[in-house]
Image (cartoon, rainbow, N blue to C red):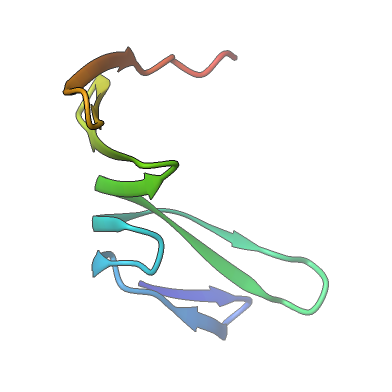
Length: 90
C-alpha cells in the first residue's frame, strides 16, 4: 500500500507480513498513522497468531473474527481462555 499526502509519497507498506520481531505471525495491516508534523507515517499490524514466553509460561494467542483464543502452557498443564472482542463505542 502506498501512502501519499497531496501527491507526495510518504511511504509504502505491505498489506501482509509473515512475522514480526515480537512473536507475531501472519500479520495484516490494520491502520496507518500519518503525522501532520514532518509527514511521518507509521504502520500498525494485527497478528493472527502470537507466541509470548515469559515467567516460565508460554502463551499462544489466536485472533479470530469475533474473539481471541488464548492458550497458556505451563509445567502443570494447559489452560485456555476465550475473550470476545468489544464493538467500538460511538
